[in-house]
Length: 377
Length: 80
Image (tube, rainbow over all chains, first blue to last red; front, side, top):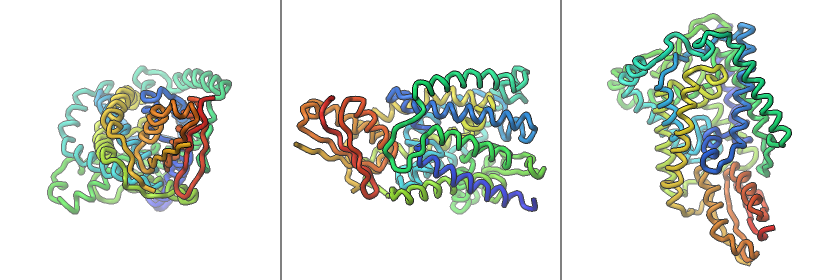
């Protein structure tokens, strides 16, 4: 392979397009899965996330057994309570924004102007984080535990296959019970609806392809930060050049297919982050847009209660900061780290639950209290 | 029969569902008596699943019609 960057770029674009179509058709909203647990006591979609995590865990373990993927994947670090704090803020942010970092993209692609506002908020939040990065890095270094050990099996010193077998046995029992109780099918009259359980399996295989061919499962938030860095480069070049965060190479690994060393960071300039995350971002947006155009559902609507604009921006801003505080967004942690049982991702999840609860309380008391409707039709 | 229309297109999740649930509860007596129909226009695909699901669980009749660039959800019929 002469140019792994071109290969990665094209592959990630295809994976992004497929993800965008699938997420739009099944409304695979991870923010909604956590929010509805607290707001509506509804767990139907959280089951789909569990299926996605379980299938990914099995597939990733097969990759490890056959030695065709990096274990653990880069750039995961050892656990730190920083991930809990990041998870907490991320949980609040995703509920206020009405979608996580991937949900924002597919909803924006389908014409949601509020999701575009969240998109801008995520970029703004990432840039804000760049200002506090030196202070936060020092905190992470001070609080990191089990230095050099990343996954739970590494921490407790057991074969990674053992917990996977135990968890798969438990998951299989649960899944079979839900099958007997007919809890997998979700009746919907939305056109072109893809059942979320099918979407979960599709997305697990997309994660598998990314892990095998790119070297890591999907992630998009450093891409957001990089977009912000380009903006800052044009507006405040001097300031950007003096910001340590933009000089760091957060991703530094050997590409498993080509054995070529690849590096990338949040700073402006084409590198492996650009080759992975820009096409994923573009792909999800355009995949969803294509899906909604085909269904004749694409529409732009601006006339919504003003508090929803505030909520979308604030939620995006919080997600932008939080994804960097916890060294990864929900996609990287829940669809990448959790199936591998990394300490960081488990701690992120620990913070995500109370965050989503808090976000739901704020949403009901601040956003919904405005009420009202403004005609878009 | 009185028909009240709500345009909740373009709104953030889950305000579409919460607005619909609030209005269904506000008019529960009239809905039960079959005096009123509530019509919601939404472009939120998730709400097209969750609003009918919730209203049906509450015992109402739900009709969904796909229109140009949005869905029309009619809640009526009184409790079964």
